[in-house]
Length: 359
Ligand code: FES
Ligand SMILES: [Fe+2]
Image (tube, rainbow, N blue to C red):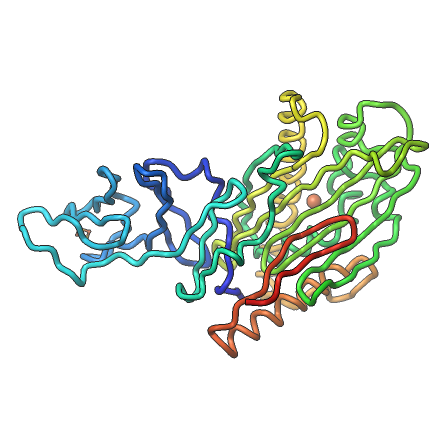
């Protein structure tokens, strides 16, 4: 059900400070902390002495001190102090996980550590690069991450779930075209010419009248998603359209819960901090609605023994169905070969997805 040999988002860079942060990824309890030199460390949340979670302990200088008997462990996982004795037990080691910081995010590798190559970190540079301003946030969703991917690949739900922010009838009524690039990335594209702008778009455009709008849901399994949304007043140049590229970075916590790190990145009005906050609020409100719906759906599916979905496919299912197929193929590949590594690349827009060679 999970790919292990890939980088997952563990948090925003600012989440990891000079104190212990406990999070679970893929059912693995982890602690994250930052050394005095600024390096992020990810360790198993388990003391090798009597196996209590290290997250009940504290950071002492650059060591984690267990909250039970006070043994300490350095950033290399080795035991560095045992109260009441001078010798250090060599075998008493905490397991480390590879971590890296890129695009203002902390990434963690939960698979075979020797395969963790930073070149495989997905390119989501819009979160932090010049020319883009991100309104960021986090949702904890009590649902299978695959349901969140499905939701992001079928945006027809905007019409029904998000009518006060990003949706109106034009979304569900406009046909969607899905393509697969490089056997790795699914794109579901919808054009909405000459429509009344939904409230969130009217707020961002700050101009009266109808708009041309497009959206491209881009998905790279297991949980990297971006929605490109372009919009401009009817009669103006598409090349000068305003664009937002919300990133939806999903990391499974358990089979039925998901860390949802997001950032709505825009290419306009970079210095407008009021707009940054309005977009953050609007996005958070919109994703609250997804969370509500997805948690209801997950509970309903669990009560029915997790049957396959969709039971009846309609046209808008084309994106989610392709996304699930890609994911299933990657999981199958890794199960057949524990050293298989999912290729990665950039979620480029403007019709192109560029892929480096598979590792
Ligand atoms: S259980 Fe951690 S020091 Fe004993
Ligand atoms: Fe949604």
